[in-house]
Length: 311
Picture 1 (spheres, helix red, strand yellow):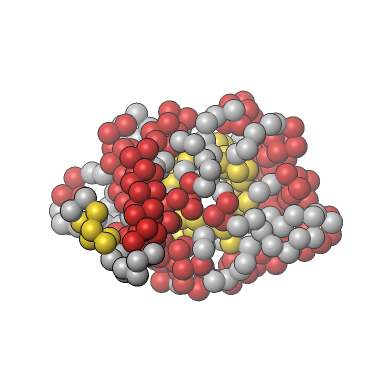
Picture 2 (cartoon, rainbow, N blue to C red; picture 1 turned 60 degrees about the horizontal axis):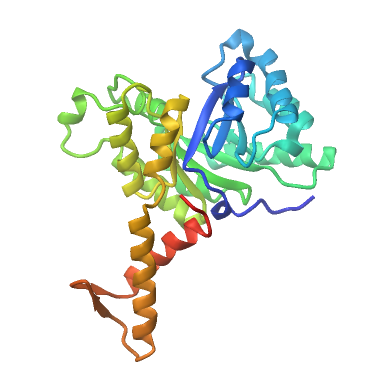
């Protein structure tokens, strides 16, 4: 088995569409959607008495449906439930060679991540899988926030850190009407209530070379609110955002894609700096602004992220 997962930077994950594992018809539609990733959810989207039976839907989807170039994921149940280990065993044993990543909810401690990774390794060895399955973990509790650095370093299998605003708000006892949405409470606190944890998720992801993904926005008819939440996440450094409805995908993809102007500016900055470097200058003026190597790092980071992709 290949011991290394694909580099997280090789994956485009502007949008990840959640779909309930208990709804095969919705899974079929999700496979054809324009999202960069699809996550078949065995956790919050599935009723307790349907969880065990829904595992077969996940296996069937990965083995029979064409997801194109999408990243294929399923979300297991939390380790604080009686469903988690059977989710991994039944789904991964039957379809692990078709799965890109497992999403682990409620990562509270590094040992939580290590347990899941150890079980995945055992399954991969037993089944003889040639490719290692990646892991995305959700930071959605006060404890997860406090142990974020240790969680991000817990396994080389990790590919992404995801902020989960709903459960995080609950554990912090923060009053919020709907997951990821803005409400009257946002006018009370002068800053952004989730700034600390969101910034920390991005910082931990960047320090470890992982993707950083923002959680969903519950109001799928509220396009203005989704735009605002997505733009905040993007300017904070997130790579993308989770979606709970297909109608959210075009908005999220657009906001998390660099504009033609941004790409052109990044290229011009790198070209101008390279030309100046030939004469030994470490900083130059361009369009009335000083350009030094910090600007170059930002420009090159954007160009590296897009590669040869066309948006």
